Image 1 (cartoon, rainbow, N blue to C red):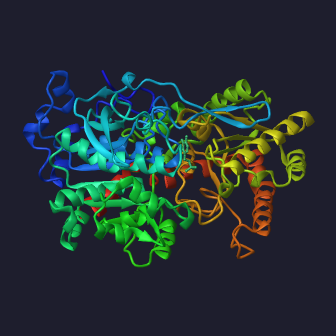
Image 2 (cartoon, rainbow, N blue to C red):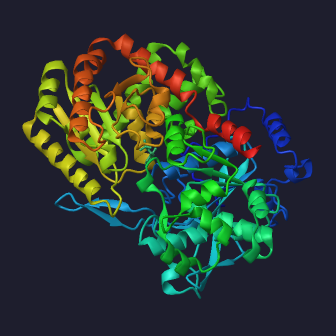
Length: 620
Ligand SMILES: *Cc1c(COP(=O)(O)O)cnc(C)c1O
């Protein structure tokens, strides 16, 4: 039976939940579906009986290059994919009639290995789609560089908390008959060159629409693109709309626009997905109607963000600050913002899940209730944290052998290793950190994260952290530093709950949103971060955490002067406020922990986010 494995938040729902009412209210929002008849037989039940419902009731198609649904299904690289996974899980919880489309990414992102010089090596991840997914019958084909590429799809059912199954299709080009290179098109997430990437985007956008048609999704009214990678779906919808693709009109584009929703995640111009026009036309031929192509072309390059902007009625950034940055980049477009969230049942540690079950019954299906954490007694919060921290410290000592202790102040930093996230900011002056630990109390810092295979600067940062970690071990002082290999969803879940403070040091405004700090907040772990992404909205000094740095000292964001100013501010706050409060004012500390849950976890979740997408984007 294909299914999401247990242990990823798909927990059984308490018997007190009334599923019938929820389904009815959802049906009202999407008035044509699901009809009472189609609900009699859930897709899962229909499958078990060996039949598929012919006209599926799903109304919304959610397209994403990567999907982080479970750590056992390694088809994600980081934040973008985890957001997609958490979104789909909340849609399943809420009975949103949606269907997901992504690529199989058969080799995963990669399995992180470090060589004796601490250089990151990338190995393919070994896993079997058939352990979790069901191979579907239909096959469709797309044209890549003039070749026909045949595609099949694997269906994964994301189980909602009260039994609603949301299908996600993983497109797979590894079929006999395809050219050898094309068989690998759906193997490597973000691997290969620009031509490979564009081939993947053809598979996702064009192949995805065709596959949904072939699978019988006849009622789709919205196509939601999670980032520009899927924007070629607009071209496919246009060709369907216009009948004669050579004469696509503004009216056709307007009709397609009404069906499309586009979420951009890229805060800096350099990060946008662009292709040289020559490469683009070699790969896609005359597939993209000239009307759309011309609107998406800028300075001789085809820009997938522009394609998304021009082909969508609703466009949004992923935090308020990111919405502003995006409006500055694209002033001619109407750009909204819907701040990202996390799926709480997937990210609460076992100890906090149990605590919430006891004090806030119903939190899994209604995380707004987490505001009620204000009433949970101190010893209970501290107890759940201590349990989560023990699990992490055990893991660290087993894997990194640095002698962490569960009662010592512990900072966590885990995310993609790349220059703008500045994993080395906290290590700017190790001498000062060492002295601080002697003066105000022991400090432990745990790092984890992968660098993109082509990001040399990111790989050097990993080497640097490991070097400093060894030096700290050799000193045997009160500062300890660990690096954990192969950061993934499972390790993330352990880390966000097991540290005392969650550190984030991006260079503003380069972090579109960030979500790991939201996972930490759910587990009562305060956030210590530069004011960027979601933290602009979640930060209340000394109440939900602390900010790092103020206005940049130097206008050049890459200036070492800014780096130093941020590092010094970080140290001052640690030394004068954060570490002394942790060791000396436990009641106040726990009060901050409680506010992380009540103020931030109750809001920064995909349940709230789903409501905003439904009302603002899908019902438009
Ligand atoms: C949550 C998560 C991320 C995203 O974290 P950011 O704070 O956005 O950097 C990346 N990778 C994994 C494995 C995660 O669980």
